[in-house]
Image (cartoon, rainbow, N blue to C red):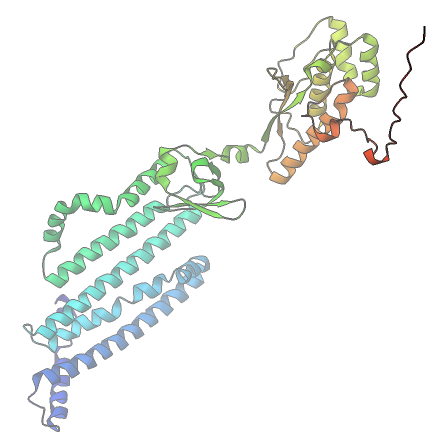
Length: 444
């Protein structure tokens, strides 16, 4: 072993073996080599573990104190991630590997099995330490550099997965006493099987890279995936799953390649813009639309003074004056619907909850069998869900309450309240009708 040349423990091993043989001589077992080696191995392993854990503890305490003084935040992250603890576990098996070869002959089966077992344990502990270091580095990158919350955790999962695959190959090579290169060469025959086994991981890695490269998804985005019944906030994006917390607090897990191969809606643009669109229609009875006289227009202007400047401008122009601005009054004074459209445009412009930097539009859609739709197209100045719904509700409540003043009727399907009912008297209370007496024929 290489460590036996570095750590000078040969004299100590022989001295300890001689004392063990002298101790066994009192029981007549001084010539029993196997008993001597077993006792020595137990003592050496105990001493190595004790020294290793002691040294590991002292190193961890020293490093922790130095880091906590110079960079407390970094020290807390190292402690919370158990990085120093997992790295310190490498020291005890190294001491065991350094001392065991001096107690047991190289051709001994116990020596071979024990050394291979310690080597396998050392490789596994080394992989755990490297995984902890990789996770720590990822957390630092996630907190400091990944300001856009890109779904890059799949790369960390891939690195850890590759480490464990390499660890498994090395452990098998140690157990069967073969070169890892030979095992890697033999894995080529199982490439198809491995691709089937790791299909989700491979697709997840590729999908994660595409989502990150094209900036399609961030942790914290509100997404809608109809095929997966997902409508909520992305709380985690890993190599194999994307977790979405719906508004009812249920968690939906989606494979990353589902988002790449299919379609999903991301509301991040709405959140970042600071405004949210209202695009909803309300139906009006087509027969309630009629022409307006000047007296009718003046009466509506007196009731709604916000229309005065617009009506005055149209009367002076003598015709319709369309305004191409994104926040402009659009309507006519020829019909009650045209004047109502102008009023609603002005009402939206005057409303402080409606954004003036985005399109404001009140327009008539294609007529249907249920009436003619009036669509409101505007953007609220907030993206908060509760405030948005309150603004939208107030808007359409105002439409319903003011439309009758313009002679317009909002369409609604006939219900029981619209049918005239008449209370008829009970049949039992009706008096029986008298049968008229027969009339005798007149005599000639």
